[in-house]
Length: 329
Ligand code: GLY
Image 1 (spheres, rainbow, N blue to C red):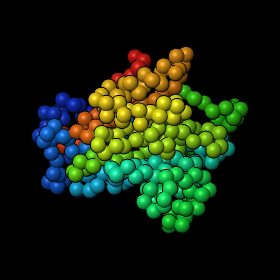
Image 2: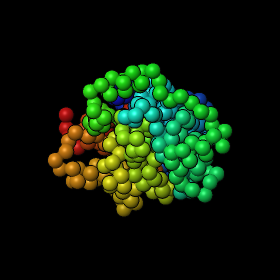
Image 3: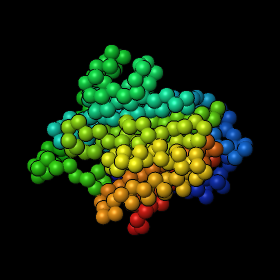
């Protein structure tokens, strides 16, 4: 499974990072004007799972002095463009009718946000979401309207269904009776949060959603407050996993509000997962993971089942950090 690849820990341990000279493992060390003064860590970027290439790209933008919003867009695009990643962008698993439909949202430090829902035939939904944010009076565009908008903005039509994903879908169709499998392996979203050298926070979230979903199904990832929320005075949060449950608790907004009330990112993520589990006392067969970052660059994560991790780049180096979980192994 694709997710198996993600949960492999990098060889770099926290201890080795801390023992190394500052910035030693960061690209283009000279250009970084990193600071940990006043206990603020910046720039910094984190993303769900061990999406190392995506976070490295975002770090490149941040360490060149770029804005958090640009780091987010450039970073998550790496996964959207990776045809081997079957949970995001090109190569994503299709809905039960064989159509790849993509969801994404983006939010900047000023509280501006944009989203696309069930977008087909466009390789970079995060960039379309940004266009919605910056070039329309709206927040969300869905389906055909979103696709038409993308063409008007110069995006090209693309085939998102790779041969691998197509063959797997055809195989699933033989026995699945069009039921959508919901289990802890089903889907993995990339959600990313960044603080730039000015201390501004932005975030983004992009996914192909649940494999073999009903046509038109939209999860949490493009829903501001559910899959992603950023408040530049507090911090940000983003989610991966079964989107329906994240939407029901407005998970990312909840976590940011908990941080506003004084909880650490770690405590807030734990509370977010506990709220979901309170509503699902008889269910164990699904996975959700939250990551969060506060204004000081402190980070945290929590998930339902072990195996979730998040990738972090900061002036201290980069590492894949394993999340604690509600259920133990
Ligand atoms: N979290 C991704 C989805 O549920 O679609």
